[in-house]
Image (cartoon, rainbow, N blue to C red; front, side):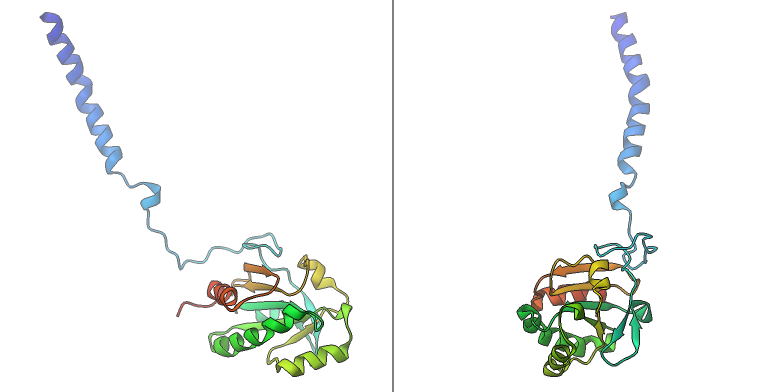
Length: 192
């Protein structure tokens, strides 16, 4: 009987402090419950590359209009880079959608840089393609294949969606559909 009283005292001596600790832990917010500011911009990554989450590699190319253009000329704006060639059938199929998307979103600051793989075709074919699709954005000429290698292209078309912070948000190797185009644009354009 005396032993039972001692057990109750021992039980009581650790039960109350343990209960307080357990309740304290249960009441504390979990890290997953901490509010996150989704609109805060993260510092740009230091590494550059053509993969999502990396800073887009910088380049300067001649344009069809004559003067050179650099990716840095468009700093602070969302940019869609589209690599294409006039002989590429999927490039032809997607260009009307890219032109339409540019027309629809240019007021929100969208820039499109159409980079032709000029090292693989002649200027006559480039000019004919640009005229046929009435491309209203800069056409850059990768006549030495340097930017193609810089972005590690495996084929054309390839589209790279870059946020206004200069970070690659989406890379779409291969033909782009209206749906994938809109998803890519949603990743770089300001929310409506």
